[in-house]
Image (cartoon, rainbow, N blue to C red; front, top):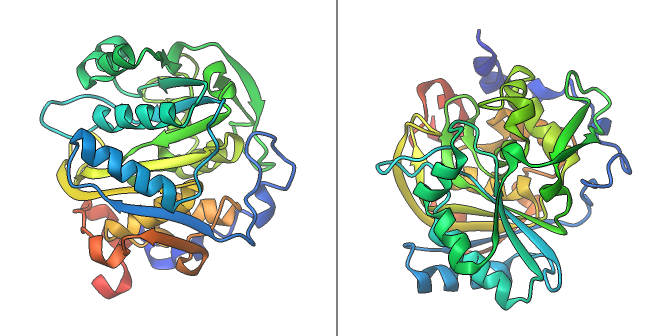
Length: 335
């Protein structure tokens, strides 16, 4: 039996080796433990295309429906997902969505807005920024565009007392200087993790100059454990998942387009990811890193702990094709 088959058979119970105290209260100033008494709220809004007005309306609705951060007078860092570029595949977060978000943040009087990413596959970040349209967005909006792979960084302690090789992270100064950090991933399947959403998007904050390409150290440590350690160390204040057009099949690079026509927004990355997974036809408790994140105290996957405001998940569910190895992640009723 393979590791993934074991997870499929046992679900979250297979991940009980990590104690609930893995990220104790007060362990990290950057990523405080969420208050379990307060249900997470996720804004789920329709967004049929990347037209400017469609995006503006969807962002306003999702912002209102969720618990957005107060950005007025603050330094906001936006972290999209730019794993690579292909003119034929929706690999990266659409630049039009990010530009609409920048305009939204300006209207809310954010003091400074920065776009920042550390692409894991393509080492020519300048070329990648240009091809994906992010260079043009930064110029039009007069904001900084930072390659986190080469940004100055400093060590930050991993609060997980059971961490293996990743006892500290070298976190870029751009990320550490953020008063509000917004993760804007693409809704995609993933050939090693099953699905990739907001939590997995945080791989890109760590510099390739230290962790390699494609962030090899994180893969050697184990993708689920690395995802939990990063998100337990550095807090994402808000997530906006680009599900207008996502990727299914052999993602996150070689899959095919799958339109879901939604944005998923919330102040809990785990709750937003759980909601997006359900939209994709995936049981979040069977996604190894999500179950591990819940066990580690990074939030809850349970439907009763997540208030979805706006559209109902059942109305927008769009089953994404999975790599056959991850077929076990389907809800029981779909098997």
